[in-house]
Image (cartoon, rainbow, N blue to C red; front, side, top):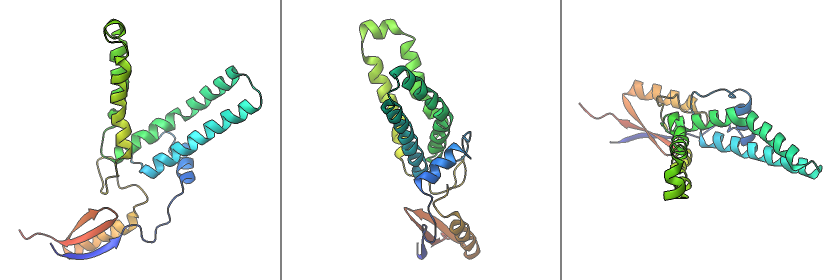
Length: 195
């Protein structure tokens, strides 16, 4: 395979800030469970969501409100963020090519373990926490996996990989009868193998 050209995928692209991703998640994508979310979108949303919740709790505590009022307000705030939490998590899992059903694994395991309390309360106390913890690791690992660099069954490559350049490269590759190979942050155009 002979390389025909290498183009930097990030060239001439204005990147969204973490705050922009957060705002997009709570406004335009509040109910959006389809498509894909890059790691930057997921962690940008998570960062500002946590900062806002902790900031509000801190301010309410400084105001001298009782713990019960702070707890109620925190619960209401958590419910407001519940849908975008799941939405961005589903899109993040889609980005690496997994089904959103992976999110349900820890909850299913927890349900099974809690529904059989006799065994786990008396025979193996504490095993519930160990098993649920092990199954929680799977979705947590998935959110750190690098994005698929090509279109997958959940949608096109998310913003940030300069989709305009990708479309131009695909057009050039088709015109010149070349294959497009994605490697890290680069796109390689290579001769198609002879039939």
